[in-house]
Image (cartoon, rainbow, N blue to C red; front, side, top):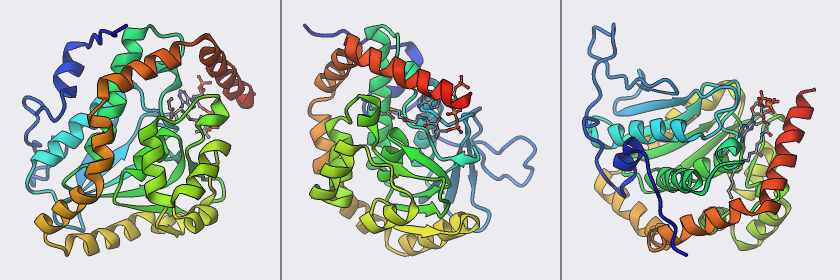
Length: 301
Ligand SMILES: CCC/C=C/C(=O)SCCNC(=O)CCNC(=O)[C@H](O)C(C)(C)COP(=O)([O-])OP(=O)([O-])OC[C@H]1O[C@@H](n2cnc3c(N)ncnc32)[C@H](O)[C@@H]1OP(=O)([O-])[O-]
């Protein structure tokens, strides 16, 4: 049975594939920034030009307590990314977190638990859109991963061109969906396979590995592990290296490498949404999510 995806007007306008968001073309000078510095404010996404690097924006995620990717947060991220993509003064973005110790806890479980199919469909479309936008961005995207980064947080990291992880034993990164009793969709899996190879991904996905920093570096799920206080400066140095390449050559090459993976989803977005809604609506899956959410609560004591 075909699923009708009912979207709210804002999300509908925003989430048309590659739609341009009306009025989102240019950042305005931040209030009080008399020097004309561009800042794209939104409650959960702070975007400001890197004062030390021309053409580079730093995007800080601040959706406390854990930067879970709720529909509202995804929408704000998408709007900010759209603005940056359209603003020719920017050539690169550093994505990082403003929530201490947490890069992103991944998809917001409350957007998938106890929700009706139309909501789940709208949510999944936004998740797809975020991935496509980051993965295929014309900008250089560097992840400055300053906290734990499971599941959807890992996908966001994997979609960057380069990942710098803080060397803190409390942090870990990976696609841990099986630990929740759910399954990483094929495009999450594809990006992991592309990054760490088939055999390592096969183990990591089935066992729901969350790699601590040294293992993350060894398996290649991140490109560099540095002391926590050097994450931002390292991301900036790496950015300079990437920006030394002419944009057109780098962008076309990125597209060449990434397009086949993105196309697999683009060719079946609606079917993927329907699959997700069918899957997440199953009683057994809702039960697993319930158990996992209870565990998170109990852990808090
Ligand atoms: C098929 C689809 C593919 C799925 C992909 C995914 O990404 S699935 C996602 C896979 N993600 C995971 O498996 C990560 C699950 N999360 C964690 O393991 C831990 O929260 C932590 C290690 C990120 C932070 O530990 P910490 O001790 O610093 O913090 P804390 O644990 O005390 O949490 C604070 C509050 O946030 C809440 N909350 C947390 N996460 C989520 C969430 N994703 N969503 C919603 N809410 C979430 C938590 O319940 C609590 O709420 P309360 O009681 O205040 O109302």
